[in-house]
Image 1 (cartoon, rainbow, N blue to C red):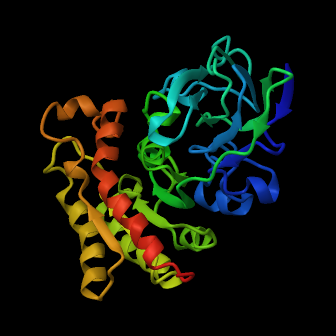
Image 2: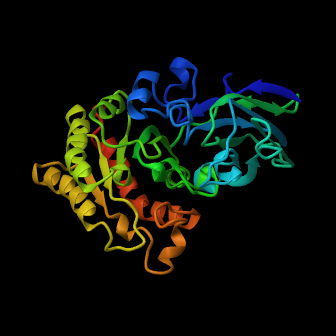
Length: 346
């Protein structure tokens, strides 16, 4: 077997916005993180990389992955398989086949994860491999081991190669999904074959304008604004929601923006919050904005077994994430098509 670093070509890392400029898997520069997470910088919020994916093509019939972390710690709301493991797929987009997980071998004793997958490609065809990387820990190293005679090539580009950028809460970040690839935005990425960057932050994305300025530095096809639950109260949401949207809009007048209110088991709960978020959308449309959508989170969980969709009446579990993704999918596809129509290159 020959081992390769995940930082080597032809391997490619998607969804880690600072990786190719700074060589790090974190999403925020240190000074920005200190403003966003006062008192908790270093507790993984600033350095973990939800939504990051490793991709490549190979004709190998056997692959081994080894991931190293800076540390490993218990998350009281998520299992080892949710927070410290990676998901491996073979194939393209929604047709990809799930191979299994890269898992810490001895629970929380050592900061690493490993996984070997055999007889995955008996015909020896060039196949796409994509790994949804672990959500909770700072990744310090990763190797991919392949048979010595295996070929390895760069991944094919996504059908929608310009990333969808998500900004929001722990729900956006993927909290309480049973595995990283079951977060709603990860599901959408597979179904629509679109790249994405996940700027969901547990408890700490509160509509700060300096964060909007940072997000404006990234190229994106669609911006999904989903920080409802992180606003501590209605007054904070009222004070920040429309200004945050407007800061994004001022920077890019033609950018498709999807505004989402948080998912609720009880549709009638938090009507005030939903009204504030809806008002941002209504005012934009009234002002002539034709590149904005609103999705009511109260509709995400459908009509049956709504309570079965969350772990704690706030965070969606796998069923809740799936239903969220199903509801968002047609809107996101429309927004992606709009992003192409409004591209300055066309």
